[in-house]
Length: 265
Image (cartoon, rainbow, N blue to C red; front, side, top):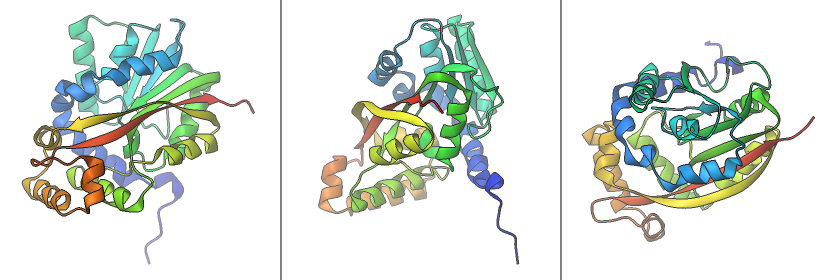
């Protein structure tokens, strides 16, 4: 009988899938308007309450859009990601823009290669739904933050209603096999509190997902795209209404920015 994986190795397959899934499409995400811009970036800076002297860790940085946005407001940003191709895109963009206070390093959010209390702020944007063990990652963020340091977690969130949640997770997984889970806001608040943060919701918003570009960005196979079309077309009326599904299968996602402050003790 096979031995079950130890907790240390849980999630290894998911992490390999993330690297495999995103490395070939890194350039797509470098050029993605949703990731490169969006009002949530300004909301993140506002929520960070910066003095200008901070050292920032951007966790799951992808092609570096958040790290580069924060670089103009702080002393230093370190972006970490599992995909070397994504990190290369970040380095390229930094060079093109003449930004010199950003460093990109390959690292796992569950096992960060930094000493305790290394950072004043941790940011993470559109990455957390890929984490197989979110509390482990959040505890690592707390470890590398100085006492009183802040975490800004920006991501797509799911729905409290089980029917909506089931359909939404299925759509995400069909499009991207490395998807783990879009948590609800309530789930994130609980996870943050469990990991040692005082947590609150700083901002919520919706984004319209253009189906064709959403599929192209991830290079989703045509067979999987067809299944998403079918799932959306045959979803219960309340699901279609909440997601505001359009004739071409474009729809809307809800997102949230959560702010955590490290608790003492």
